[in-house]
Image (cartoon, rainbow, N blue to C red; front, side):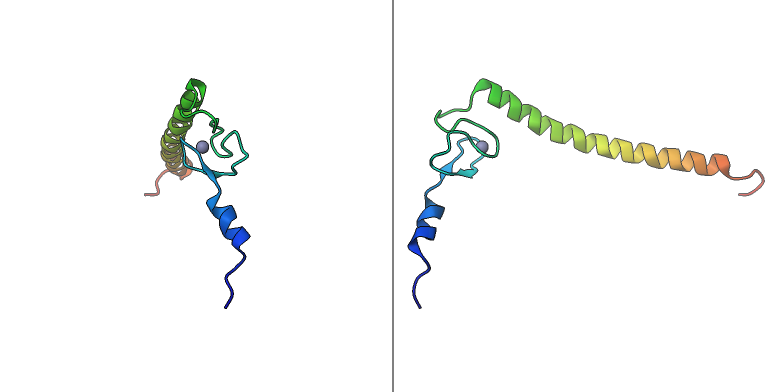
Length: 90
Ligand SMILES: [Zn+2]
């Protein structure tokens, strides 16, 4: 059994990990493909920090919003169900 091509193996190793999200980028990349943090700088820029902060918050808000909308939808559905049911029926 011969080893699989060494080129492929080296290509996997030769990645530039994003300092912020640890996404494996190509060595030639100057910006992270995932979070767009500049890979040249050691620390992500302030705008990038704010961006990521908002991104995290957005996910939280979206999750809460989906739960809220789900409950709201159920509430409206129940309201319409009882409202439209003819009187006299349980
Ligand atoms: Zn990144």
